[in-house]
Length: 66
Image (cartoon, rainbow, N blue to C red; front, side, top):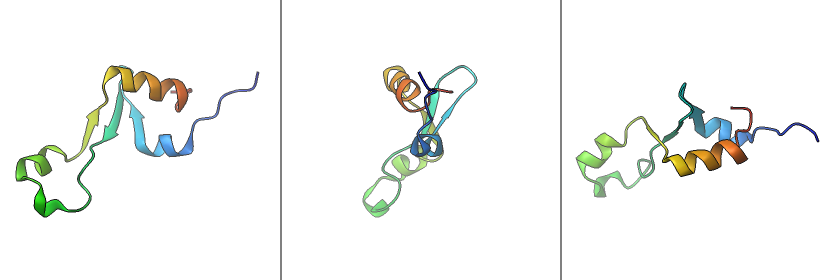
């Protein structure tokens, strides 16, 4: 069986931490920011760690080589 390729879109959107968790950007911070609270805009800066179940799916299907 041939090697699995990493999905190009996934490698641009996700990073794997040293402990194996998956980091991703936070949603809802691109436009219509006037309607969102300052607290939401502040906490959505940077990245977040995905839930364990979501991280397993990403690693298994999209980032097989880590």
